[in-house]
Length: 64
Image (cartoon, rainbow, N blue to C red; front, side, top):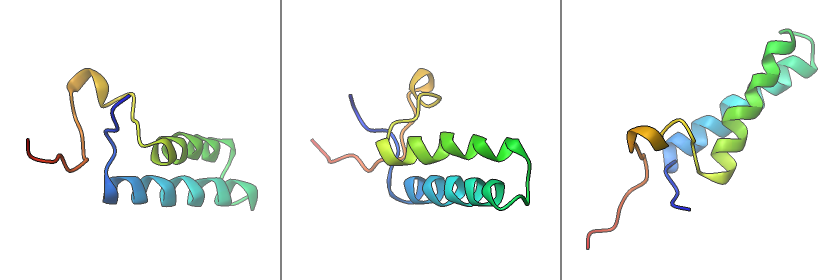
């Protein structure tokens, strides 16, 4: 499968996911913080299913 999550987008997703999960584990926010798993996983695997139907990508493409 083709990657569609690039550099800065990937980093932001991973950081956001870890922050949300950390806040949940420390009791600062409720169970909604577990939604941080979504950006964390999409950042780690570099594929965002929400981008697919629209043909979006934040990856740099090599010229042909």
